[in-house]
Length: 282
Image: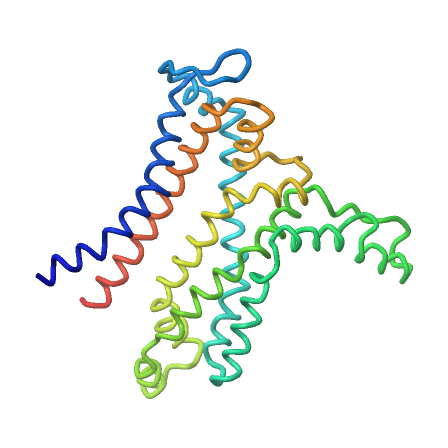
């Protein structure tokens, strides 16, 4: 009877998942095998041409650009986010609550507005250039916009809270007795960190990297505003094909490619966490 009740409680979740995730996903997959006419209208005629075009060297470079952006975003947010998360987890309760509030504060503001904030800072007539000119450190504005590095900065800034929170949860759950035992056995703080703290927080690092990597593939508006379209990423390409290009089948094929890339990352994350959990019980 208890099992039946548990299954009944799962029905709304399954319905929600089917309606909002399953059906759209099936639609995208089916659409990726369709054709289109000269006006961009969908023709229900099976074809593999869309996937053949995905493997074109020009489009493979787009996948490489997106993968590189997502990986570098993960690395940057990890390097900055780990110390922040570690220090936050060691604070007193009230200070910790205040720090977490500040970390989550950017989520209360539109991501589009925050991106425009970087435009105001980095533009040719932006705050940074105006200050440098006023201090007579430069004679002409420094071109800082419309580069891969600018897009990387904006993406890392937008997603770093995910990395911090994921690592914070991992550090906060550390068994303090293990750290105390390490100190009692004569290990230094640095050695304890490398041998105990860091390995035990690998699941948090992997989780944070995954949470950053996945959305970094699709934040196309950051690349549009900060990158100026100089470097094409998957999100920008899919958006352009589905709107101005009027080629939704090809856009769907690239979406499927992005989904497969995300599933690959999730598989690696699952493997890392599984190996870590099994290692703890050996």
